[in-house]
Amino acid sequence: RAPPAEAAELGRAFEKWTKVAAEANSLGGAAKDIPNLAGKLQGEYKDAFAAARAQMLELFPEAEFGAQSARPKGASSVEAKLAKAHLKDVGNGGNGVTDAARARAAIDDAIGTRVTLKDASPRAVDALVDRLVGAIERGELEVTKVNNYRSRAGGLPYATEAQVARIRDAMARRGRADVEVASGDRVLKDSGYTSLQMGVRYSNGATGELQV
Image (cartoon, rainbow, N blue to C red; front, side, top):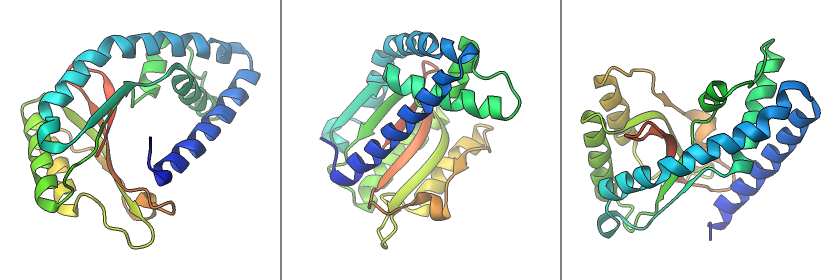
């Protein structure tokens, strides 16, 4: 069961996505294909899930770092996210999400992995960052964005700025200097939600979200 702060965040997100999907569906035309595209993509995510799950369990052994949970993104969540991308593109004068290629490009969190740290001390987080940086340097994992969420009421993040910089710099050494690192108000949560949340690409090419 998710902690109260996280459950509240998820509840608000689900309500927002549901409204967006309904709005896109009401437009007709190309938007009517979104449920079928969502089903196709969700099937692909299920096929890619086992390899991504095994990779994370090997990278962050539960005995050392703490319990892991993982899941491929559900069809309803995929549909809602595609609907949002469709509405945004149409609003900008485009044709929207009209085929599988565009649909795949719109989903950057196909397979989610959560590591619940049994020790959140700076030393333990350093060990996790060591593993993450090593995987990046070996070309086994990519990090595309970093959101180091913490409470607005003076809460401390799990990762320090220096630890986040290590992840960003490891990607830069691989030729990817475009890693988005959120800052300021974007990482402050009224609910108290705290997580090191990263967009990743697994070794099998699937996109995902890693939460620590």
